[in-house]
Image (tube, rainbow, N blue to C red; front, top):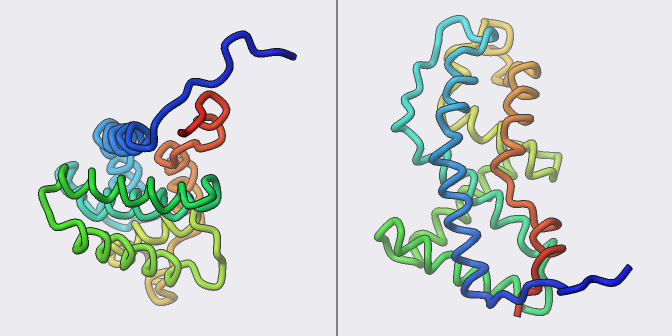
Length: 179
């Protein structure tokens, strides 16, 4: 089937802007839902009482995961150029040194891979990363607390909610051509 108008052509700089702004907007709108899932989880003995203002670790986890996916969808050095533009824009948003931000996000990526070892599935690593960074083990029943492992029912619910925070490169690339 022929497309009448084809894909919209978008420059790499614009892609980086859309990526950063979309993820930040999703975090701003959705973090309170994640807080609700955590604070109201029936698997916890007491509520962790995470504040909606405590989104720093969450934001870094979401960006670390999303940046991890870029090389799977972009090739021929576009991944490197767009990733660098994203870091540049993020460092402006957070008013920090770009190299320092890159190190922090790479540390978060390493942390996510470590907490999810031996699996290499970044999607499941996100929930485990949230579990660790927000010290949620402290609120579990003795069985899971002693195992130092998240309750699988809690993780499943969090995994499903985290789908909303992963950038959909397939849909973006179907509609747009990056130039």
